[in-house]
Length: 303
Image 1 (cartoon, rainbow, N blue to C red):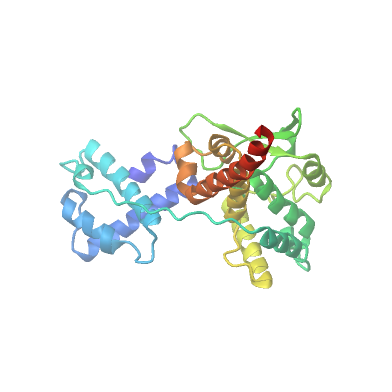
Image 2: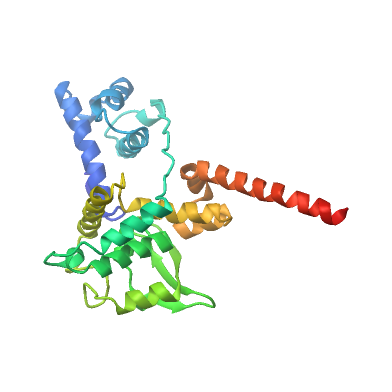
């Protein structure tokens, strides 16, 4: 009943994540002989957080899973399935966010060069390596998530004063939210190359088939990048690190944190700061060094 009530506001992927967590909760209680939701209590829910979730889950994934349990408990209390607000009795686990690591310039070059060698396939990315490489370039030059890059629609690109501007609504938007448009910027070289490459569908260069299941296409990109990583020796070779590389490049070049957050489509600057804290510190050190190098020259001029 709970999952059915949220079908209209959650994406298919997010709904599946809720279903997975609640299935784990149900199985955990069944092992203890608890069959009715009204029998839940704070103590057993705390035990579920400790022993009912996979041991290998990182703190962020564990916190995310429990947040979904909390959403269920709020609805359960509101609809009188449980007699007391159990959420208020549960402790909030602290998530330790892993700092993002971008690809180095050398790794980026290796990845893009190796992408052109993915030949010999019978369809899609393996059959058209130039198109696949351009998809990777699009992610690293705009910071788009892999699902958004796959759905890139050239018809929505307009000419700005200096660059090409692509407005899109990111795939992670909640269905109930007012759609939030994000701007990505492409230079002439990338825009022209994408327009002229072999398109995998009639209307979009990177989406093949009828792209009804974007998660499938994202998985295809992930596995191709894993192959590239194995061939080049680049560890942890996955699409999201292209987005991280975009963000860190901007931060180290002096782009304000607020602008980086906007380009990434984060809900707040705090989110960007959480994930890229060490690179923000590196930016501060770089600015300090530049100022220090400038002082002697200024002193000489003044004298």
